[in-house]
Length: 620
Image (cartoon, rainbow, N blue to C red; front, side, top):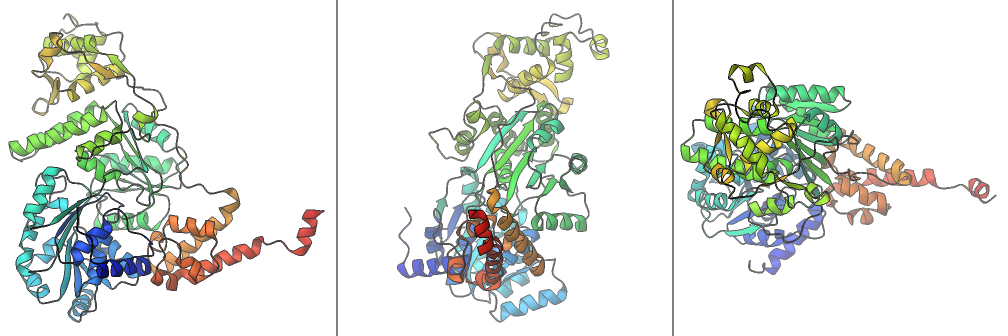
């Protein structure tokens, strides 16, 4: 158990929380983490996206003497964080390549004069000899290393420059360092502690659970039709759709636009200006859907992303968790939806094998992919399995995933598995699933006739299952370790030693009974509805937020989150003291935006008050 925080530290932290950030209470381990860093200790923090990681280093940076130094991997993330801090009245800045020479000189001079509270910098720039020598002469209060999983060579976002950060104690002796991440297995945690030289660090692990996110996985049949059905009723909501290839990103974005959505593509093949413009629009506008490869997303702080959809299989549980974690950062209901199929498995295996990494690393990547596939095929509570992967035990079912809301039916697939495995063997382990299914179903394709597979014993013995049902069998055989798609043989299916147990009737295989109907997802929840009587004021508050955001050149959520607007909607404050009592409104935002919102609420109240004449009309 962490030691109880020093009373003075606790008082100062609470004061900053209320007056600067506008919140009454800390969440989870926040207070203990802030106390540890403020008192000069190193820390490793694992906290889910939206759990309040930033505050864990921002508040100690403001309490301790000197300036907080934040190592951040992306320019967009730095810009977003700095803009948000500046709205809170905190003197924040960043140093990166997006600054002009004049702007960089101005920031440097401000740092030298001690006029900056918190500065953000990329690891590549920080670890340059000149930068280290210069910053080591300044008064540094604390060092935060954000997205710390980037230091793990076994992780999903490894960045070589992060390894150099282990040298920081030599240049900043006695300065506490805090490493933060939302995704790290036990192996990755050990790497972070070792590679960043976090000697004596206190480790704080929050629950990985994001209870507001509903998880849904469906077998892929017609992915566009499935996506259309999933997005029904979601027009006007912000979301992210992930695809594996740039070509698919572009095609899906065009299709969504044709379907009436405000959709934009994002991938590494776009020019810098287009990527920057699309990201800015996503952050600043309501209802934008970004269709992207994994090039998009790290550090995106937009709180009101209502859904994250995957049209292709991610590479690992860590990737999936981090990508879906971009939904519902505001704590409101959100959806994590995915379709995947056999071709995704083949493609992912091909990507692993085609790399120039060591055999050990490839095996590690295969094991992570296997874990994700096992999760996809799970018949139990998805949340329990997901949390278990990160070492967190949950006893009860969550009631907020597809397998809880609609329990999965299973069937004894042993005999049909024997038929398929036998077909793989009879055809020489040289063919992919499509050809093997043709043989089993008795489809006389040119390829079947060419190889004489209409003459073998497995010809036509699988007519009772349709193509989708056979593909489900194949997918689950691969996940179970009875088959593997050989990337070196263009995805040809090969038998494993495990397959012998099936042939010998040593095991019974109970498989998911996949549904290929047109309703792959549970009924949508009401996400952002307000009472019809409150609708005019709700629209007025959002319009005011949009106009102020445009005036200050910031995204609307940096004015106030939706949750803050909802509190205004329900409490109808008429004085500054009442506005200040609302979560998310601190002194700086009260001074900057308070009068505008009070005036909006007052105008609405005046417009809805009944005059004496209208009162008598109602009574009569």
